[in-house]
Amino acid sequence: MKTIFVSLIVFLFSPLIFAQAKVCGDTKINIQKTGEWEDTRFIVNAENDTNDMKLVLNSVDFVSSFCEQSVKGQNKILVLARCGGSGCSESTYIVIDAKTLMVELVPFRNRGNLELVEDLLGRKVQH
Image (tube, rainbow, N blue to C red):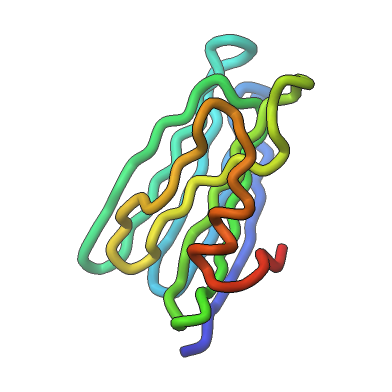
């Protein structure tokens, strides 16, 4: 199975809006940032032919997503959510199955979970 991964970053004129659109397998992923400072929210939308989901993240400053394939050939959406402070881990991932859109892993209290992500994938994260 070949994974198609397209990245598009759109910066609009308003500093309050940020958007990313990506594809992981047959799933479209959109991340939007709304608000500013403590009112900032990141909204992660994912949809394919059979499923859709929405995830709202707060208390983070930076969000990016990646498509990774497990050793079993399953596409996984990795959402990396970080804050800009020294009390935050640089590897706090949310893992979503790209076919079922089920959340498989979430970070716990800003502790890094890269090792758990790599256990789930069965290999090192490539991004």
